[in-house]
Length: 495
Ligand SMILES: Cc1ncc(COP(=O)(O)O)c(C=O)c1O
Image (tube, rainbow, N blue to C red; front, side, top):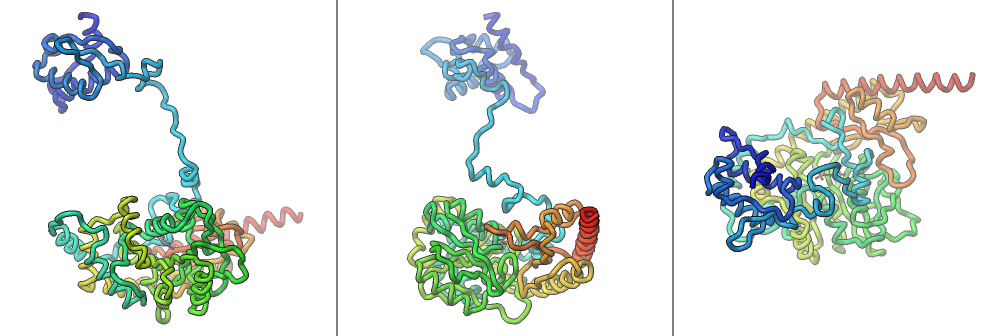
C-alpha cells in the first residue's frame, strides 16, 4: 500500500483552494491514471485508507471513485478494491502516453487548405481600417430602438417547435421587398438565414452536383466563388462589359449563374433591363438557375433604383439573396433569400440539416423593426450619409491621386472601384497601403481566370469625411512614391 500511495501522494489537496476537495481529488486521480503513474491493473487502497491518507471524508473519496468508475477509468469487481481499467490509457499500453510529448498535427481537408491562403475571401484583414469595403457604418444605427425591439421579442414565450422561418418576418420583409425592390413572391418563399453568404452556400448545395458549371462575374464576388467551389462546382469566370455579365458567344452551359445586377461587385455597374432579359432567356434555354445577390441595393444615389431581376422572372429560376449586414450593421448576422415556391420544403429541410437558423427572437425583433418603419427610416438616413461620403471619396481621390487612378463612381452601394494603370501591381499597392494604415482591396483578387485589370476596391460607407480625406491623401502619397521608384528603375534599365 505504501508504494502505491507514494504514486498517489503527489495528490496533495489544498483546503484553501477555490476548487472543492472533490474536484481536486477527481482531477489529480484522473491525471495520475492518464499519465501512467498508476498503470492499468493497479489496485487502489480502500476508500477508508485513501480518505485517511488524504485527510478528506470517506464520502468525498467514494464519490470520486464512483465517478471514475462510471467514466471507465477504474473497474470494480464485487466487494474488491477498485483497479485502474486497462482501456483507460490504451495509448500508454501501446507505448504512447496520452498526455505527453508533441501531438501529431491533424490533417485538414483541401477545402480548409484553400481557406488558409491569405488572399482567399474572408482571410482576416484584422480590425477594419479606412477604406475597407463592404462595411456599413454601425455608429449611425439606432441601437436604442433596436434594443427595445429585441427586448420585446425576447419576452414572447415560444411554445412547441418554432418555425425555422418566422411568419412575422416573412410578411414584413415581403412588404418591404415588394415596395422597394419589385420582387414577386409569397411570404412563405422567404427563407431567413444568418447572412447572404450562408444563403449562397445553401442554394449552391441544394442545386449543384460536383462538376456542375457555375458562372461567376469576373471580376466578381469572391465569397460566391468560395461558396460555389465548396459545393463542388466548376466555377467559370465570365467577363464584364458596360452592362455587366457579357455572356454572348459562350458555348459552355451553366447550371447556375451568380450575378450582382443592382451594383455589380466590385465595379458598381448596373445591369440594364435589356441585359437582364437576355440573361433570363439564356437561363431558360439552358435550364440554369440564377442567384441574384442584391447585397447593398438599399443604397442608391443617382436616379431611381432598378427593380430586382427576380421580379422579371416568370419561370421560377431566380433566387433572390439579400442581407441585413449592409442595411443595418455587420454583426446583426441576418439575411434572407427568396426561393421558388416548389423548393420551399426542401430549403426548410436543408436549413434544419445545416443548422442555418436565425434565432426566433431575432427574427421577431427584425419584423417589428421593419413594420414600425425604423428600417425604412434608417435606410433613408444612411442613403443621405453614404451619398455624401461617395461624393467625398470621389473628390478626395481625384484631388490626391487623379493622375494615377481612373475612378468608376457607382450610382449606389457602399464602395467604389479605382482603376490603376496596368503597369501597377495592385497587390503591391495594397500591401504598401496596409503598412500606411489604409485598407484597399486589390481588384486582381476578384478575377476568376484571366486577370484583366489592376485597381483598388475602396469602401466609403463606414468612414467619415475626415477618415476619407486622410486615407485618400495616403493613397496619393503611396502612388506617387511607387511612380517615382518605378521611374527610377526604368531609367536604370535604360542606362
Ligand atoms: C457582393 C456581396 N454579397 C454578399 C456579401 C455578404 O453579406 P453577408 O455579410 O450577409 O454574408 C457581401 C459582403 O461583403 C458582398 O460584398
